[in-house]
Amino acid sequence: MIPPNSRPVTRTRGAAVSEPHEGLAEPPRDGAPESTRVSLKGPTAARARRLLLASAWIRPPATLLDSLAASCDRKTWELAAAASEQIHLEPLFLAFMEAHFPEAPLSPETRTRLETQKRLHAFRWDELRETMEDVLEALQTHGPPPILLKGMATLGALYDPPRLRPMRDLDLLIHPDAVETAHRTLLARHFVPSPELPDADYHVHHHLAPVFHPSTGVCVELHRHPLCARSMLPGVPPPEDYWKTPGASQAPPLAGNPEEPAAAVLSPTLQFLVTTLHFTHGDHIGGRITHLFDLSRLLELHGPEVDWDRLVGYAQSPGLASSFAFSLGYLALEGLPTAPPAILDAFQRIARLREWESRLLFALMRRYRVGLPGPWPGISPRIGNILWHSTLKRAPLGRRGLFTAQAILSRGRQSREEQRRRRALAD
Image (cartoon, rainbow, N blue to C red; front, top):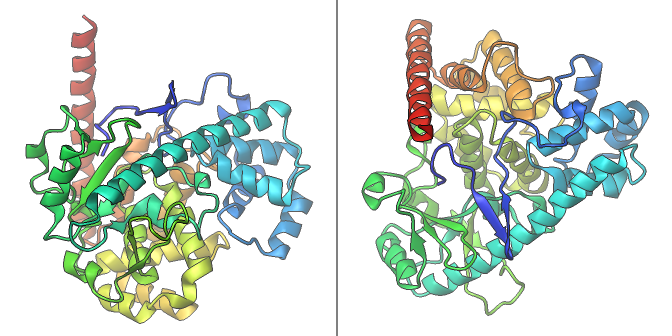
């Protein structure tokens, strides 16, 4: 977990660079082309969105590639590249372009920016791998092997090479009987706690207070549960279910060395559940676009292995069913891998999402997460985030309206208090 309103710094062997935020709700980089500063609408934005989301495929269909080749001009390519920069998926978009459209009409300046981010992500992956190897070595005698969560769980099969998937920190699910011991073990290995994030703030949190690798500075979070409190909807399985066979399976060694300390990964069924809830109930509407790509790649590669009947059984409450129905519905809307139609219909029946609610969620997704077209005038990302969560709430409209009004007023007070703090510090 990164402290609020902070921009983490990545140390790439001596050089400090600002690490990407997850999302579009931020100013463009200095020197970025004008295309990153304006929101284009209509057919150009739709084509650019389709082009950007095509990089979510591991093996794009030939018909999709032929359609993109025929419809995407230089303006479309530049806009899609700019969007990839703003959601910080430059290495993935560049790899897609180099594999399928090596002669794409991008300017030299745009190609240079994409290549620069590709190198920075490669440096970051070196640090992440070093950190993970040290963590697994330290924890190999403390209970069952940790379960890799979020970015680390996707590497190898879904993203190869790993640098294609942006990551800020390492998330590990630790067996309930070993989580406190694991935390003490890392501290004994000179992992550094953050003075800004005291342990007392995390006694009921879904993960312990984060620690940082002594040389790479990478943040490590040891989880009691893979999901935060906001995602703990009725039907979400308890922590012990993630440790039952076939809840976890062996993950390949990070460096290809079979003697390397082992980790585990969730089954495709539980991975779908966890990734979907991170996608729909993440911290910020401008972020979590990476989880959409994770879902697409997971279903493309492991869709036949997902136990959909088990997930329908979990989703007997409208809240969890809404997350599944929206995520799968949006994947289908954008022509990406999704669930069988009968399964999507089952989730939609349980969720009881009205047509206007689905349309609003799809529009918020495109405008505030993908960014094509851009945000509505006068609707900030914070307000968009409130609309997102209030629409996903399965409660009477009056109660949701009250929640929305209270959240907007609360955010306004928080914003004013933050401004006063900043002015006080400046004085």
